[in-house]
Length: 154
Image (tube, rainbow, N blue to C red):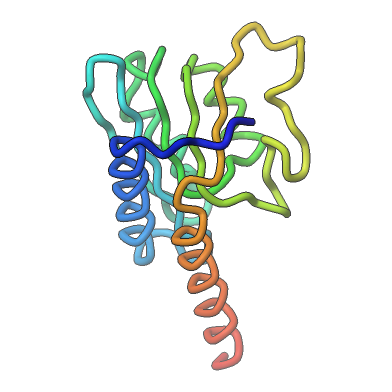
């Protein structure tokens, strides 16, 4: 994985993904608040966020919105994708993926497994991690704190 130099566009687009994650507070419980943005090579953007339980994760939501336009695009996501979402990203032919916070329990791009290095894949996505990781980690900490608070009150 490449540590990003954080060009201004990357920071702006990751901040947009963070805003989508914050928006998902009302839609996602008890799922973590995750946001994603896809930017096509010609600059068209699509936003997505985690949906209700049993619904699409942020990555799958934004890929559904982008459709075929995702081919060759860049995706920004606030949390390392799970195995299911990583597969969807590769199948969509995303060219570059930038994620903020690692997921030590479900991350499929290095934290638990690393499917991106599998030579059997016929498409390889450039992967960068760590952009705005502190902001996204704080958002996830707030999610888990709220989850514990609700559990104590029940």
